[in-house]
Length: 107
Length: 320
Figure (cartoon, rainbow over the protein chains, first blue to last red):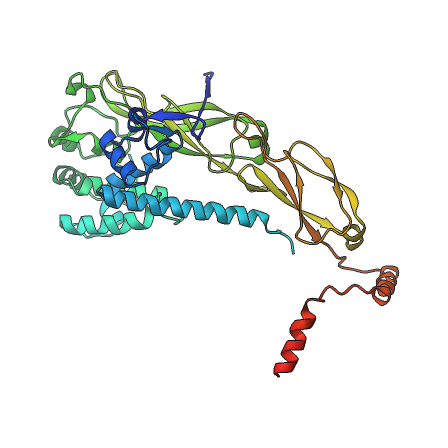
């Protein structure tokens, strides 16, 4: 059977999503997303704008939030704290990878 | 159908109460949750743990599970003859169903065919898969074929594992950790519900020469001592093909020589840079002639690479 070639969508800063789209893709409710925005765990493109817009890569954070909420039965504040710490770990890991790429491999 | 020992997975006795089940789950979830764990096979282990917890925390599912009997983990088995009659009002084949899919369908003490639930539309599940590609594939873009297996309700509402092949174009510009989404290629929606999405997590294979940092690439450039001192031009590999790199005189070890826009392409437009990290290489075996030349240089040169030690050494000798 011939399998049709599928195009992918980028999840990066160039693509934007509305609050409703982000809720639909992540499994979180709009109210839960608002709470995570209030706690600073998810940052909209323009926090002062209405309606809120998000970079498409926020889907990754929001889906993580949905999994953590379900799997650890976390309430919003605990969830926001966990996400903030996870984001910090990811940033530090990325810095470590960047620095390690710059170190010579051979003696 | 393969048997799974849910009690063994959670590390609890068969008579464990709900608080013990919850405690065991939480402990293992902290250890294996793929969003927080660095354990090998964390995702696989967490799926088992979550599946065991979902079944054992629910008294109806637990009773049905206990009635299946005991087998060795991974052993092929069929539910006892009266089990299906007691717990299910639909037919399912034990050959093409997973234990987790079976228990996911248990409501009100019985397994139901999905069509018995009227016309409620249900969205399909989202799936995430890691896609391993080479640096060369990331540089020029590639196509990947993903063999997936997803639980799906057939026309009669019976749950089955169905193989799915998804062929996707990975555009140039991806790098390690990039996420991509394929709408509608996840689990099938039911009763008009939308299909789930498929998320791809790009993982770059380590390259024998280039190290990746976002869209920038780094590689080691070994130079002979005289090349570093006098300067030279060397042919170096890049993902787009070899280029000639000019090494200026007086280049030192650790210096980064930038080859602009020779790294990985960025999404939509632009390229990262390629950096050559200079290393001063010395021969493992020195010929008599080379040794004589080095000795001649050592005797004639006024270069002192440790000049900055001198003040420190003077200070130390004063204090001792």
